[in-house]
Image 1 (spheres, rainbow, N blue to C red):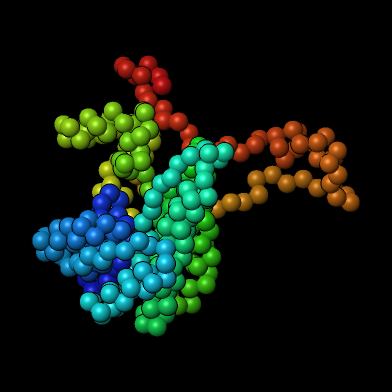
Image 2: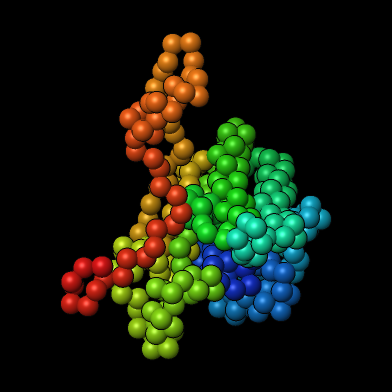
Amino acid sequence: MDLSGKVAVVTGAGRGLGRAYAEALAAAGAAVIVNDVDAEAAALAAAAITGGGGRARGVAGPVGSAEVADRLVATAVEEYGRLDVMVTNAGILRDRVLWKMTDDDFDAVIDVHLRGTFTCARAAAVRMREQGSGGRLILISSPAGQRGNFGQTNYAAAKAGIVAMARTWAMELARADITVNAVVPVAATEMTRTIPAFAPIIEESERTGRPFPAWLRRDEGLGTVEDVAGLVVFLASDASAGVSGQAIGIGGDRLALWSHPAEKAVAFADGGWTADAVAASWRSGVGAEPETYGIPAPQVPAPNGQGA
């Protein structure tokens, strides 16, 4: 995939998934603005890219405010003359169950994930529309935003909102040839290593260099951060020109398209529904097969293939 001549901004790119995205975009030929709240991490990531023959500039700053978003876009234009790709990856966690989550816990996560995506995408869209040559907004979501997750009211709400914004902006920016998609990644990161079923496997892989087992890469769709980066490069490229408004999952050996919400079952009652009528028909009608919620627990194969 050739991204020569393209310029990208990646937020939260000092480490983890964001750094993998930035490095993959640069390896494909794009110039990259590497953003991170940690100035040293941003500088080191940019230096690693330039040391490998790529083009990159580190820019420190916490996403969320319009000022930081505008500065990232302005730096891309000042350094490389244009902006073609915005990857909104920056995020934080403040996990707590509902009755223990504080206002600050909620606001901090919403500010970085949801508002940060909004301000950065808005600044990028303004510039791309001025350029008149299209562009790519790649918004990073999460399985938690698709299914919910225990202890992650703030994070799940923000990630669900990001997918909703992708669908909305895909409509609004279509005439400007700007595509907007949400990526739903699953990879070995600081967050996934806290999952008991995954932690020992990730630790063993890091200690020995041994690849993740096939069941983990395929059945659970969990791999390395590098496994996720190929989708971001594709979405940044001309090859993805017809792809917009989608939520696309990737991890390990798995690539998936998440469905958009749709009515699963419908029933009608002449004159409308009373509470008693809903109660009488629920279990045999539209509620006969309720939807699941929450991210399913990993299914670890038993030794010698004796089942999960």
